[in-house]
Length: 84
Image 1 (cartoon, rainbow, N blue to C red):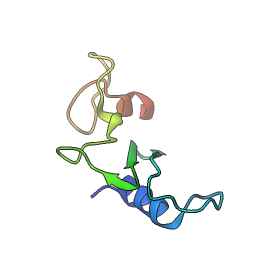
Image 2: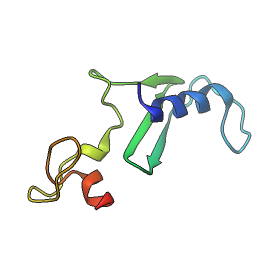
Image 3: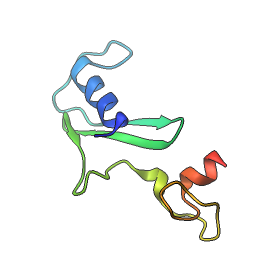
Image 4: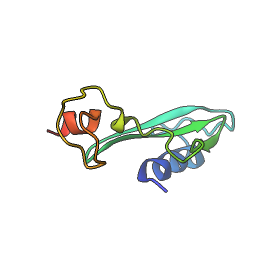
């Protein structure tokens, strides 16, 4: 699984950083902007992975066809452009 999913699940189970109580119906996105770009998604209190566990992997959306090479093999991914 992804580190962003682990962080999102931890927040869902432990409550929010500001001390707000847990809510089983809470939905939120945990954004990670560091060595890569991604998100962990909690929908209705449950971790959402998507059909092929790619939910939240917005860093590999191609936005510049002739952009720099990304670690995933594509060119012009958001992640490659931000980390270039």
